[in-house]
Image (cartoon, rainbow, N blue to C red):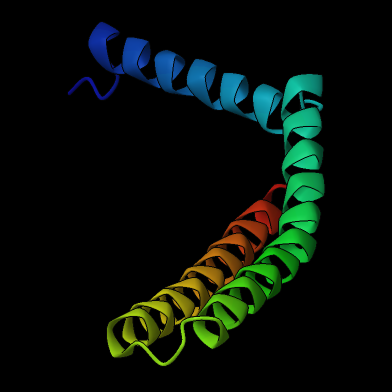
Length: 109
C-alpha cells in the first residue's frame, strides 16, 4: 500500500509553497502609498470633524435670520424650519460617517 503518490506529494509541495509565500507577505512592510493614504484620510477626517459643525452652525444662523426677516409669512417660516432641520440631520450624518470611517481606518495601524 502506497501512501504518498506523486499527486499527493505535488499537492503538499504546492501547499507549502503558498504557505511560505503567504508568510513572506504577511510580515512585509506596509507600502508607502497605503500608509500615506491612511494618514491623508485621518487628516481629512480631522478637518471634517471641525468644519461640519462650524458650517452647520453658520447655515442654521443664516436660516434663522432669514426666518426672522420673513415678516410672519407662514410658508416662509415653515420652509426655513424645514431647512434648519435638514441642516441638523445632514450634520449628524456627516459626523457619524466620519466617525465610522475613522474607526475603519484604525484597523490599518
